[in-house]
Image 1 (cartoon, helix red, strand yellow):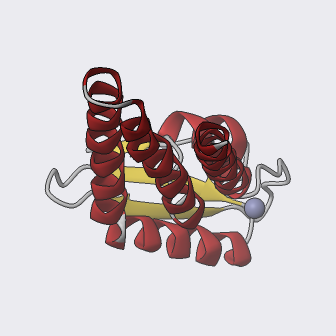
Image 2: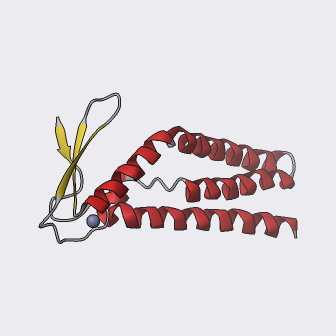
Length: 146
Ligand SMILES: [Zn+2]
């Protein structure tokens, strides 16, 4: 089964609407065998889109690991911080900063974000989100130490 991802009127990578020389990109999801049909405006966008997809595919578990680590550490930090000693909250704030760095390095935004903004802007949005998380994490670490 082939499912259209994005639209035929807009480049999935850069969001340009000049689609007179559009190219079709077919990607198969590993495991499910489901195919996604995507459209891009140029060979450059096809190369960039494929590069991002294979990067995302190869680093997917790194991202999931970072997300789980962040959830576990911030949960632990919050619990120990309120039960044992306030300073354990630092575990949560440092984990947030670390996760922000991970998101900046691996800006895997949701498919919804990609459909709305395209891959190119989606990556930028992901990177900004990572920086915001890192700043919030570091800022609250510093605030706790002061
Ligand atoms: Zn394009």
